[in-house]
Image 1 (tube, rainbow, N blue to C red):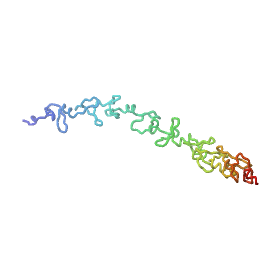
Image 2 (cartoon, rainbow, N blue to C red):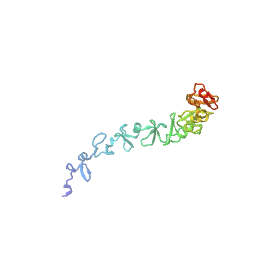
Image 3 (tube, rainbow, N blue to C red):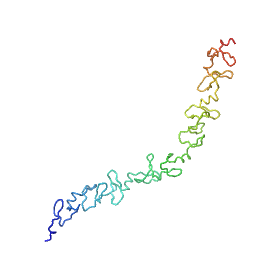
Length: 283
């Protein structure tokens, strides 16, 4: 007799004969369908049933689906051979994913697809190519920009269109200018005519249209005290005494000989000196 007819052909797991039955080979071992499915078939993520030997097993990141169960979580359309995206364990077709999770471009109002470059500012999004300067229409990209009236401007265009020009250097003032005599200045351009120190935030005064710090103004224009020769500014309520075109600080108006204060008293003069009546009686 033919030995092949009598040789047994059994399931590798349950040992039942496979003659005349459907079987599956795995790693050169034969299995009946039932044992194969129990041992090796994957569970479908969607219906939680085994994916049998006669079904197509679709997998993505170690997860498995029946071909008929592989569909969009949102619209239920099949994802077989179609692009899809995963979000929080769910698979979505690109349309549903875009509607759910993508942002709309503030300029062209079209969807910004996941994975494409975009610009974001104050809760709004733009396609990179749609984020352009309102004036020159060029993409701003990673350059600095200035928003105004819901429009965005690159810095050169903003300066040309809106910024005031400093009366001193004629360049645009973009931040923190100073107004003096109703004209705009850069803070660093608004300086004392005398010593060139910045005047913004300091006390200053002017003469003949020119601004001066108090020190320079006093040195240039204030009356000099006949006693100590220092300027009498007259600013801030400084008291001084004036007599025959000469001025003294109150504290300097003293008798030349005995140093007695002559403020509010009678006095005598001897050439450039002032004397109390006591010291002056011998004149």
